[in-house]
Amino acid sequence: MDSSCRSVLNSKKEMPFPPPLPGRMTASYSSKQKIMGCSSGNNFACKPTPNMWDRLFDEGYRADILINTDSGNIIYAHASILGMASPVLRHMLNQSKGKGRQRIISRKGRGQQKSISIRGVAHEAVRVFVRFLYSSCYERAELMEHILSLLVLSHAYVVPRLKQICERQLENGFLTTENAIDILQLALLCDAPRLTLICHRFIIKNLKAVAASEGWQVMKESHPILEDELLGSMIYDDAARKEKRIKMKNRKIFVQLYDAMEALVHICRDGCQTIGPYDKVIQKNQMPCQYESCKGLEALFRHLSRCKLRVPGGCKHCKRMWQLLELHSRLCADSDICRVPLCRNLKYRIEMQSKNKKDDIKWRILVRKIVRTRSITGAPYFSLAFT
Image (cartoon, rainbow, N blue to C red):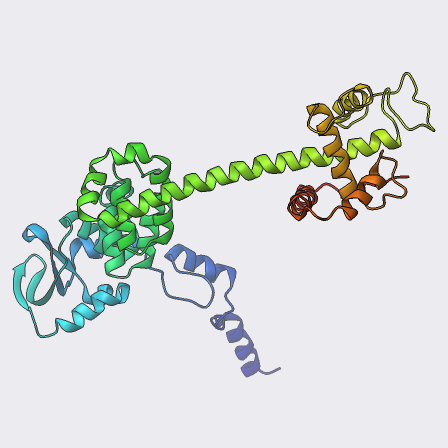
């Protein structure tokens, strides 16, 4: 090997390595990026922090827009940021081109600046609102202090994120009997259906206390239709709760009747304690059954066998037992093999005596409701005819 080749090889050993290709970074290179505060991967640009945007808003560096608020105060801002954060403010800025320019000499610098106005709320509320447009950050104490004004501003200037934050804060423990009416009217104006529903339920639940508040008295004069709607909702809710209680009570009765039919079949098929079929012997040490109605039905059976009246309507206990037997015959799937007394006779009589259609319709409705209620409760349905 000649001297020229040796010099080339020695120079290659001393040559630095080339930089990594895009998307392929060494560990040392990525660690340097992390130290500099840059993101990893192919993105080599540093991400701005919210503090930078807050500083930009607080210092008003190269601000080109003036926001006039109530009491003559001014907020300095940047038109590009406001236009990107709110479509309404973008339209206002476009409309103000060539109009309302003021020559301002202050610590912000010298120059012509456009101006817009945000009025109707406190100056501090507008300041918190504009700060949120910069960094999407806020101080909780300031937010809670001006939350109603911020809800109005976020709705009026179409800032969905801020509106969602305000609604969530109002829903979580902010409602009281004193401000419920005001928040309800504000939710209706700002198109906040979830907040409207929560306020509505809170007012109906605490109507007596809310009706004694100052907001209710103001609403009666300014918005009487809303008062009528709230009172109508209260009446409707009371009627719905009453109807629900009646349905639950009737369902309980239907379930008890079905349980009584099961206990009746159990007594006539298996026997329980002292009463049983003629072809089975009841053991003295037999344990009581699981049916709650069994004991009462046994007492009715004994009474029916010993009662001397036995006249329809003459004895209420006998009448109840006859009604249970007829109900069983209407529920029974096969009266020919059923062991319940008089099941087949009663079913035959029901089929023959179809003149009184009104009573027959009542019995049919009762049977249908008992079966339907039992199926709704989740219990297994089975035929009431047993061999």
